Every structure is written in structure tokens, then in C-alpha cells.
Length: 603
Image (cartoon, rainbow, N blue to C red; front, side, top):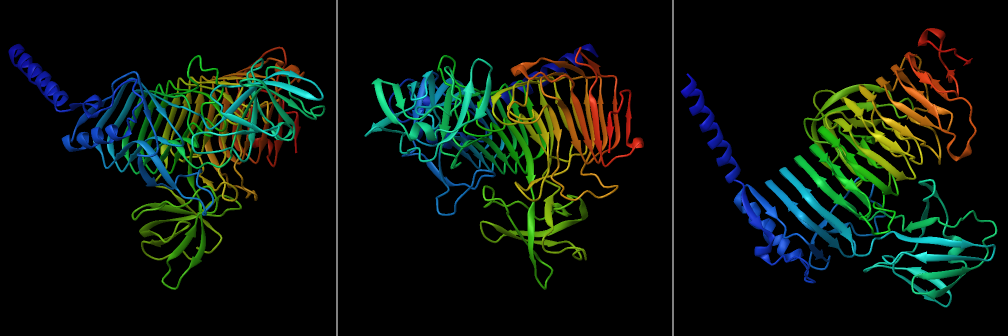
């Protein structure tokens, strides 16, 4: 028996080795991609990818060092990307550095290569592909599309600044302008970073544009103008960009089983790494942060990790985001509104937000829900027999069997099939002027062992709406545990906010359900530790709440704000010398809340 077991073990080992050998090694250097060469590596990368596709299973290995890629000879694709598609008059053609389209079983091993992009480019796109992995690679821009300058001194009539050397500028007749490779800043969306307090806040570059710019030495510029009514301070870092999102950092679309591991995104133009209608996405040790010793503050033009209409498991583990102009993580679906129902009972639906349209949001066989946009409550469900994209903004849907009698124009349709489970753990989110995590998915969500450091707004927002961004949907099973929240909300809000945009509250109906916030540490300086609206079965227990008096706020008591919630349990939390919180309730009865604290206000 022992000999048989040994033989079986050996055969198993041989099988594993055979499987490993089956994944052929393809070296990019064999296709002309040389480290630390001024040559455009793009054409060689494309040839190497094609060689990988022919093998069926392959590992594409980069040469190490630095390679540069320009958009001129890059693969071009017309891509409609969620939350980053605006203005029908502008083209949607993207230049892609690493185009993986129709690929299966390929690993891109960057070998710690630094890939420097020029102009405006998508670093990598994984389109209609299966079993793909990207690892050990770094991406940056030769000229980031966000410019940065640091204030040296401030007076009522002049401000002295140092412009970061990665930020190209010109001064003409006393007026400054900023430009890059094939682009020029026209509208200055401005966010200030305060390094002494590690916070970001919205600002305005208009006083600088209206003043006289004088270059004292290269990259040192004095602005002479009216600054008496501004609140700029020495040390402030102004970061600014055109607000139009005409690109993304990376794009994963209509793909399955995708892994990113040990990937560093030093800068991303447009929205960040966007996964759209894809299944099973894993991010392990992915860092979105400026390159060490670069002196830069901003790493992402907008969101860092964005998931729109995905399914399966979305996993973010041991990741870092630092220096984004928008939310580090956003997971959501998209509500489309019914605009017409024809005689054949076919439904015409429309993308309602101007940044999201142009892609298929429903497929034959999908389960859907009919949503009242005012209450966000589902009126019923159906299964799709057919789904067709009519144009960039409209789709035609046909359900299996009879169309429900309540179906009418003005209702919204939610895709129930394309909703993911989410696990976000062991990660750090810092240096953003907006929120930390936005989560709206009906499947299981676990948020654990993360650090949220001085996010500008709520570190966690659970929303759902069918009237503004049209981002669906309700949550049904969320656990938030073992996290640390440090001095979040300097721009607005406090810690955790559950805020569906239901404009009409219906008695006995709740948008969200089953949310557990347990065993976390809240280091707060604002009063709102938790705000929740329209939740059934909410637990807040075992948490430690400490007041830091950050920014000299002087608040003495935290608060928990509840509106139209039911089956709420708040107990076994600990508080520092600031004392127990005030619980403020609205549209609730005494039986809706169980707590070991005194309820200070009930209305």
C-alpha cells in the first residue's frame, strides 16, 4: 500500500510539472522590447502578445528596467467605459499599451519592469478574455495629466510657488498654462493637499489664472494678484486637471477569472482600473500611489478600482490607494430607465447619466427587477428572453412570458444577474478628498482588517439611487469588521454612511438589509460615527470609539443617526472620555431599536 501511495504521489507530481511546462515562456526581448531603450516598445509588445495567443498557454516576460510606449503606433479601440464616457461630440477611441483581446490562459510577468506611458493611454486592456494574470509590473506616465505645485509663501498680493518638474507649463504675457504630450489643460479642477495634516480639500485655481505669472527660476513661479480672500497656506500642494474623463488606467471588459498581483500604478489618467461586466476579479498587492521619491502627491485622476456590472467574486486584498482625485473603490450596477413599451410588449430602456452609456448592460437569460425610482423598492422580477443595444444610449429588452402588468415608463430596470460578492481586506486607503469605499451589491460583502486614513468624506458609503448617478442596487448581506477608521470626513460627513436615495419612505419597506458593523476602531473628531437610512436588521456592536480632537474640532460627543430603520441593535461598544453617543432617530418607534445606551432624542 505504501508503494502504491508513493507511485500515485510521483505520478501526481509529474502531472503538475507537465501542466507547468505546458505554459510556454515568451520573452518580450525576442520581439525587440529592450530595457532602458528610447525605442517605442509598443510594436514589440503586440507581437509578443500575438505569439502568446498562438500557444494557447503562455507567460509573457518583460525585460526589466524601463520601457516606454507611445500612443502613435498603439492599438486603438472604441471603448465605452462606465462613469467615464461624456460628450457625444468627442471620440471614444483609446490607445492601449498592452492589448489583451480574445486571450486565454496568459500571464503577463512584468519582471518588475517600469512601463512609462506617453500622451493619454490605457496601460492594459483585457477584453473578452479568460484566465488572465498580470503581475510584477509598474506603470507610470512621462507627463501625468494632473499638474502639481507647492506654495512657498503667501501674501495679499503675491504667492510664491514651486512647480513639480513633471508638470510642464508655459508663461505667455504673464499668463500661465499647463500642457502635456498632445494635450493642454483648459479647465482647472483643483484639489489641495495639506501635507501637515494629510488631508485633501476642494479648491480653486482661478486666482492664479487671473494673476500675473513671473518665472523667477525654472519651475519657480511668483503669481502677482489678489490673494487676500484666499485660504492658501505655505506647504499646500495644489493639484489640478481637466475634469473630463476621456480614458482609464486599465480596462477589464467581458472577461472572466482575472488576477492582478503585485501591480503598481504610479499614475492613471481618467478613471482608474475599471472592471466592467466581468466575472471573478482578484486584486492582490495592487498599489495605486506615486512612485517613491517622485515628490508627487496624486496617483489617480479619478477612482482607483471601479467595478461596474460585475459578477462572481470581486476580491481586493493587501492593496494600497494613496493620492486619488476620487473614490478609491466603487462597486455598483446601473439602473436604466424605461422610456417606452411597444405593442409587442418590448421595453425600451435608457442610460440616464451622461458619464455612463454605450455598452450592453443586459443579456438574454439575465434576471431583472423593476424598480420604483422614488422608493427604490422592487415591484417585481422577470427573466430576459432577449436584449439588444439599439444605440449608444438605449437598449431593447424582451422578457420571458408575459410582461408584468405594473411595468410602465419611468420605472427603472436593475440587472440582478450581474452583481458580485465582494471581499475587501488587509488594505489601506488614504489621501483622497472623497469617500473610501462605495458599495452597492445585493450579494455577500465582507470588509475586514482595513485602515481608512483621513478620507475627505465617509470612508464607507452604501448608497443606491435611481435619480442621480443611477448606480444600483440594494445590499442584503454586509459585514464590516476589524477595521480602523482614522479622522475621516474633513470635507463632509463622519465615518460610515448608509444613505440610499429613496425620496419616498414606505412604511414596512427597506432598501438595505442585514448590515453588521462589529469590532471596529473609530478614531473620530466629528460627531457622526454612523448614519443609516432605510435599513432592516442593522447591528453596531463591539466597536471602540475614540475622540482625537483632530483639526481642533472640540466636539464632545459622537452621534448615531437613524432614519426609518428597523431591527437595530447597538450594544457592547466602548467609548473614551468623550462619553457615550447621542442616538438620534427619525421615523422609528421604540421597538425598532435595542440598545444599552440612552436614546437622547426620538421623533
